[in-house]
Length: 203
Image 1: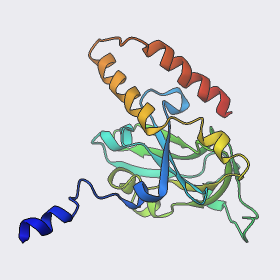
Image 2 (image 1 turned 45 degrees about the vertical axis):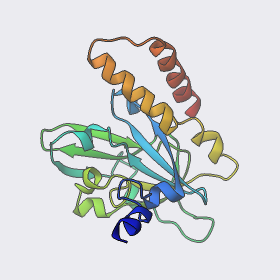
Image 3 (image 1 turned 90 degrees about the vertical axis):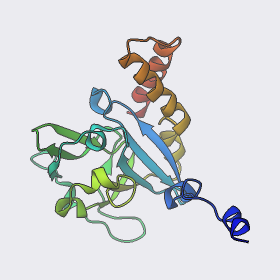
């Protein structure tokens, strides 16, 4: 009987997370032209977007502690000053894909700029990161998200479709590993050209 019960209960490996069930992932690679600094946009079924870092981003992969997160991205713009009201999100800051959301500083002095990666209204900044910046590393797709952005319904697919799909992103990661080993896979140059073309179209 125990064997029968175990056979009907999905294992931890096969259970889908909330993100897997309700969101689609799109990846922007080499953000700001810096190799490996990849970010992820989680597109909900209601078309709202959650901006995160990819698990392959140095902030997640490297062991250096995160010491601070600064949302003052210029002398005149602080993302924490973003205040919205009503269903139309009146007062929200408008974001373009290459617009900065924040700057993250690590204990070794390295800084990383995280971008919106999608066009839309800035709905929310994750202020929990001010108290616990390590959430970016520990739970990048949940408690460690960066921001919530609401695209126009008429534009959401246009911009999201320019991001890499999970399948294309996995292929890119495989090719990066081969390149690190000194192997140049066939077709790699063509794929890099396609990625760069997508980046240009996002602006």
